[in-house]
Amino acid sequence: MSELDARLRDEIDDQVAEALDAYLAERSPRRPRRAWPVVVTVALGVVTTWLVPGAAWAAWLAVAATNVAWLVAVSGRQD
Image (cartoon, rainbow, N blue to C red; front, side, top):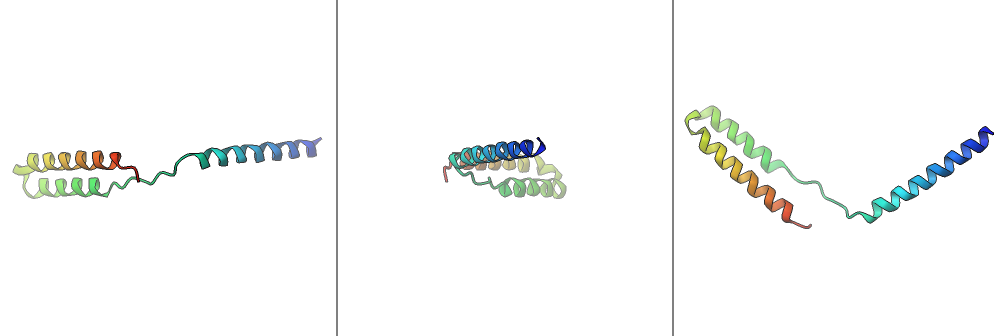
């Protein structure tokens, strides 16, 4: 009885694996988004705030505008 259970489990496992492979093959491959410009601009904003606290609002405004522009550009691309 336990051999039948093991074979049944193996068959179910094989069918699930085949179905998953077929599903993943149908999906279009997605490239990971590159977030380095967002990280770099935030780092520059932190450095600017530390060096020139009076100009922090302008630095963060520039960071926000740059990041929004980058995210809009990246989300619109169909590579």
